[in-house]
Image (cartoon, rainbow, N blue to C red; front, side, top):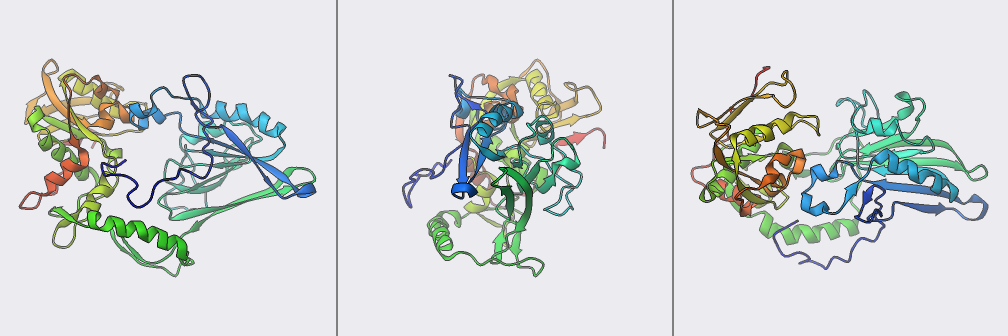
Length: 426
């Protein structure tokens, strides 16, 4: 999403491929898009058919703005897949390929085409999946792996793949199918490291290495991409502010929360929060400390608006507890300056926030406070449903505009100190 006028370079003509949505259901109970497809390869006696099932996360409503999925439900992944396999087989599919957004991960130091210590939320799905599935192409976790899942569950010897993130890997998958028997006789895959021209990323220069093959950019694709690079340069490369040093990790979340608090003081804001999963990059300033719009956009590419609402101290505690419950991965919300909280994972779930304070004074559970978040959180995103009450809500500027206004200050903004959230077990 963008606040700028879309399609300034060329009109968007729509996707030229079919979306699949096996588990995304409308209010009528029908799938939003077709659930599966059949693709044929070869002709005559050598022809084989492959059935493809595509689906997204059951947890999608927890990860996107609620308004974007209003009226939709997201069914169990394994149940959705298993319901489709018999029909695809009846249509002559010799192989079944599942494309699923859920994923897992292997040991961080392992070969990207390996599967060491594999675990993750996809495993319970695989363990319930129809054994006639041949290949599962996964994602979500941004991790790379190629697994013979039979190592972990001999009854489910699926070929499981994931190509990591950001186009740094491409998975080369091959299925050998005997057209006479219509059986898969071999399946294999490897993650190919994509190394093209050297470039400069958010963490600085990235040079080529002789450890991996180099691939020359395809001229027509490179020219097409350059059209958009050129069109965006004037806007993205303009200097918008400065910061005293690199900002990453918790400090990045704190800086964003500080910016949001400052931008909504007029709405009565006393506290601001941002979600760690909403921080998509670090800020690496130029040697003179300057930042470009492109630097900020890499951190916050969502175009969320700011929402300031009234919450009691008890509601504050409850929403902070949601960062430590079993509904989704742990997320320690990043607060603005002046607000601190202590947590203890050893305590029972729902009672892990042991202290909260604003400007040194303990939070009164019965008192009211004005709290700012981005609109994604305010709608209950990332499982923080406690923000969705929206009492006396005031809508403000975008989160990106707030950060831009914050870093325009002189002298340069300091890197926030990591002294706002405290783990009692450390």
